[in-house]
Length: 491
Image (tube, rainbow, N blue to C red; front, side):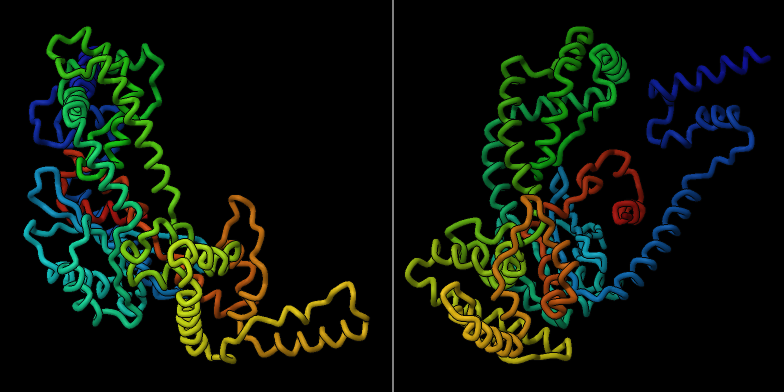
């Protein structure tokens, strides 16, 4: 009896491991073999149905969502949103992802996916507007949003203008700006290059699909992994062709398994899509180029590092330039220096005019914050007269008089003046700007509030992309969509 039971267990285990299950459309855990296998391992274990598991997961998602709603309500900062739109592989469905970015009370940069929805392919900006409006109301943050960054590549001005006019009534502090962000510009360049190697990319995608879909191929591939010391490495997955960053990851991981694919070609006569040695070498060269592009987008967490990316400043950033410029000024290692330098490079002899206008706008924003803070302070004035600073060739009495006069001037300055009057901080190479503000927020409370709002603005939507969103596997596609959205949105 024991031998028969053991034999049955082994048959079930082998069927599960080899994927040789009769009902190909069922989830593995629903199969009779799996249920028998688990029951014999632990008779007390209760195997829940798919519907029960789904209901439990969604209940947990709702509980966590309520916690996040209360958490957002307790934050003393404004929020920034990124809205990303992309199409499915078959171009029949548009996916819309709304992510919130903010700096928490511990001065840590955070982001949360609020919603991940399907839109019809022939969507319009009215649909997007209703989506944003419903999500903000659902999360009860419609009065706390300052910026919305919309990712449409390439930007469609008529759609942007339509959405801007519609979204203006959603938020008190809202300011919609849509730019060809750094990541979008790179995306256009990279996609042009990738179009030249469509055949090679097709082969690599077919390699991955063959390993995932063929029982024999998977067994031989796993054998090659064990023999080639490749265990522990992340398996390659199919990319989302519209997203070059996933294509890079697909190439990078596939190259690590190059020998395993070659081994599969040698032992499986049905595997006929393996790239040639020349094509693998070409893939290596392309992957090295993509790695540099990937690094550049990955290293752009906030606006503070991406203000001046091109001489065509107005074309790329447009109306968003003030917000981006304020973010740079609020970087204590730059303050006005980077803005001055950038304006000189862009505007030449007219730089001083643009800088004066920029400073006036920054001061206006500061006074709005000061008014909300209950301390409007004196009007922004000229910097402290440098002649009041002590020198080695003056007497003690002159120095004392200058010190008194200097203190009198400083007492009339507002926080913005005092902050800009002090020289930029010499932060370490990897100096944490947010850590500096955490330490100095009490000294500059109004500017600290501005820093929390403006430094959370992402310069690119590239950082919003969740790996869970991008990897759309057959398992995901088999889920009820609200289940998928719930899993994607969890921290």
